[in-house]
Length: 408
Image (cartoon, rainbow, N blue to C red; front, side, top):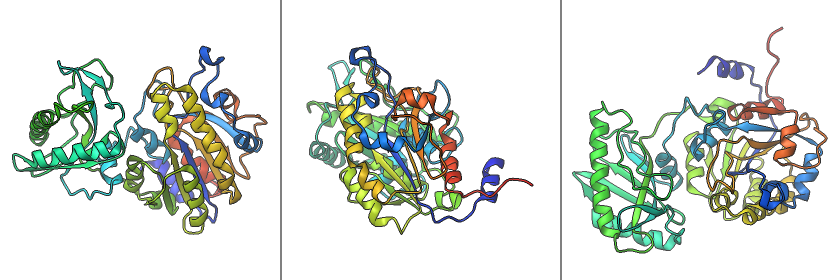
């Protein structure tokens, strides 16, 4: 525990307040000339957010540090108050936990997805046309039945949503992390998964197992279309993290739909709430569970998905969908509400970026920045300024009056 975290713990007071962190994944964007120099958030019709803005403060937050483009794991860890440079979690572990898989000590987990390869092995579509979940399930069964084990290492393949799945390597003598077997862009071949620490005998053994798995897996799906290839990333074992309830003295619930975000929340000690299919479901469940928890993490994926597709209008529509449902959340308004993203996903870049994401913070003591709308331009003018995302949770606690005075 750092000295600063120790100080926060010493100052922490019990609270009856309810805190909500509403994350619109990949919310931040860049103003596009083709769209009248607006971002999707600026172009969206958001009357309920606009009304909330009148009583809120705004700012922008860096998920890691200026110039660093984060994955979803580091982006969310920072929002949960964990320094993403200190606590590194492989995406495979997060996804596996989110799918309800029980990881055993020494398991190597990888977040995977099907892709499309050309005849020379070049990746032409990293998401295989976003195949349907049923097709992903069929392909995962094909891999499970066709591989089984590799050199006494059990291979567990579990389908997720759409083109995504998880692969677990279970056997003796495995260690991560390995670098991603994913070029992270089209037009390149799949790189070999190699140890981050090449001096580790266990990591080298793990890399050899992954290479053999790849060889067998690709031979099983090479005639499939469009999903004739696969990518692996976040290949590592499960780390130990200080738990959220202990760190913040808050009973925390995760209201997410996609497995990865449920897995990350579970890893830090939040309770996963299952059976959610829409933002309306999420807000209604918050109201039903309001007395059982102190902190609610609510995650909305569509903003990021449409940003990665470069679809300005659909990202705008995803923001409007949240705004339309927002009155449900505000009927039992939490004492502290933060609305932000885990990173920016500009439509023009079709992927995550290093740009700070906008933040709205509402509480009885947040003050008002006297701004009319919540968007990137307004956030640039807000009183919160620009700061690192790892401090947001502590700022929410302060707005819940959870900290005693420091010093005389």
